[in-house]
Figure (cartoon, one colour):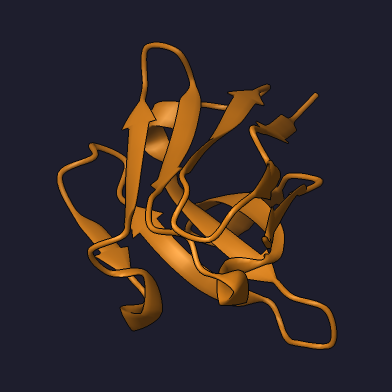
Length: 116
C-alpha cells in the first residue's frame, strides 16, 4: 500500500523556521521525483519545490528561493522541506507528491500557519 505521510507543520511566528518531513512507503521512493506543493485558502495548489530521484537537481518557485531547501534521504525513504524566514503568505497546507512518468502519489497534507 502506497503511503506518503507529511509531518512537521504547525504555528510559527514570522521570521521563524519549520522543517517538514514526508515519509514514503509502498513504492520505490529512490526512483521517483519528489515535490512539495502548497495550497492556501481560496487559492490553487502551487508547486513549491522539486528534487529529482538522485537528489542532484532541485527547483524552487521564485517566492521561496533562498528561504526553503528541499532534500531527500533515499535510505530513509523520506523527503524534507526546511523552511526559514517564514512569512504570513507562506501559510498553507503543504503536500508532498511522488511522480514517475505517468504515476503519481499524494500525501494528505500538513498545515503551516505563519502568524504573530
